[in-house]
Length: 317
Image 1 (cartoon, rainbow, N blue to C red):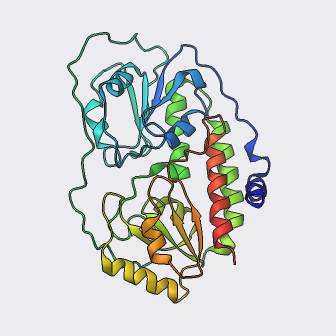
Image 2 (cartoon, rainbow, N blue to C red):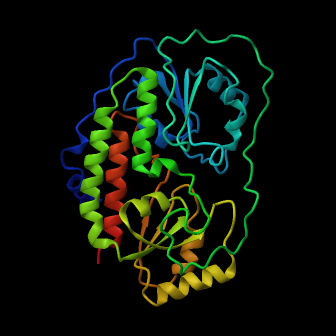
């Protein structure tokens, strides 16, 4: 653990200096749908004005709204979310309360309205109902062969909805949020850009080192740094991989094509354990929801540095 801490310090350098958070003119309430977006929002939103919808330990894959969650959504001035593909249970609330600003991290560079002079909350009662997460329409238990390199998220028809793992997209998303709150976005952009440069220096020598991930949450990160993601156990945690996929992955491990296997803390490692049993391969844990990173002004930059250290530690010979 000590060595890993040193690694994080090496890849961060001076990048973890606390970013300034300026208090908004009004006590506007910002709701981030998931913790990583909360890390982004915390760069310009003081902690008392920021909430995260999903509780720690919960993922968008198994979340459904409760009446208390709907009330939190209604009371927010700004909602930062990942879009309808990642969070279908939120789609029905977009535009329901006109005074709100919704910022969709999947939607690119669409300008957000200025809400610093927004009207007070609409206290009108609505007869809302619980919205459960929908399942993807088209999936198959045996996904594409694990041996095919899975770099850019468009190459095989799969569009990775984990947009917070696309740092460039998060710079634009944070700019939208900062504009809506009349805050300065430049410190965040500068810190993320600097961290990406530091991460690239660490990861570039490891680009040929093959690895498996638990599910396809990392395509944006892989594309950012040109890494060699050889395969994933499943496209999405709701779906178990087929026997052929697991056999193919074990064969790749036996041939030495994969030097590291990543699991995720939100899901049981039993499947990974079975595939790597008896094989000399390095293992590590990646958390796509960054639940071990506390909310803070520099939280997102810390997350990028943490991921860099975890990849480097596992991929190095």
